[in-house]
Image (cartoon, rainbow, N blue to C red; front, side):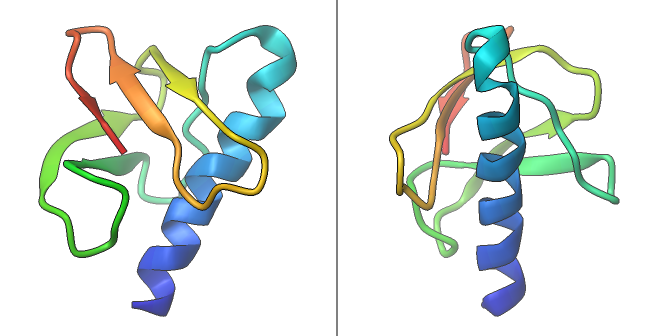
Length: 78
């Protein structure tokens, strides 16, 4: 559970760093991808994966543990 929380935090951290560039996100994960979940919880089902280099947009609220993302395909998740 702790690892999953850090992965979610890592995704938001990567998104926060790119916030100055607009709403474009960047995947910064050693695995080269991050799971996109159906809701903002570690136990929510995986609905997609965002791979390094794949474009997506995000909605981030300061202090939030999860970010809502939208993939180029239109698929959304957390």
